[in-house]
Image (cartoon, rainbow, N blue to C red; front, side, top):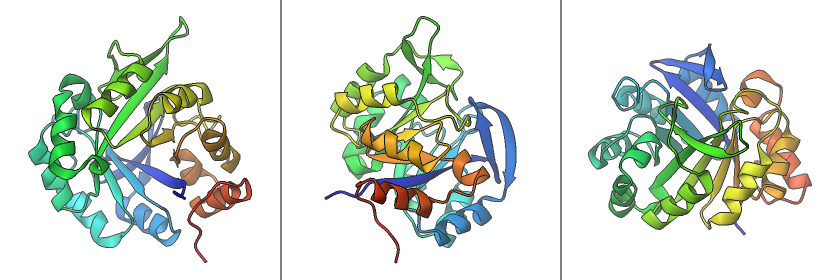
Length: 254
């Protein structure tokens, strides 16, 4: 049986870890090496590193930072931010990334999904989908750090990226980002039901029970969080214990 993963999200701006609310109002939290060492000691399943300044600054995540983190921390790393070519993906993979997450570039150049998948394997290609609930009740995909509406329905886009060769979806609710009010279960359930790909729920986790409901009721295959791990006493281990108690298979450290 596949184990449900619990994955901290670390947002980078240069050599700083930050945390956002609704993709804005950023708060600086410290050095990424220190933060990642803490997660390493707590037995996390994977770590998601997103350089949120990479796309607006037209660059990829800083290779030296990824190399430094991977040299200190030995859990699998998903790295995203500004990646537009197979060669950029290759550079990050050679310097410690295990998976590549693309977002804006996937929308602008869908063929990149297929290219990365063919070159490195589908398991390496993660599509990050940022979603906002519009005033008329429709969900819409956003790009460029949640600033630009893409004119895409997230369910339709998820189906498309699956056809193009993606191996995983990182589904992020802009509205719930940093609020710790719970995941958008309606969004998660719609996307999870539409594809066979693993769907990682992101945005809104505030308690371990939020993660339970994202998996059990929303159909997500993994739960990711940032604020809950940064600002509360809930650790990835505590979350996994709650998942296990709810009958959800996880990898527990003994």
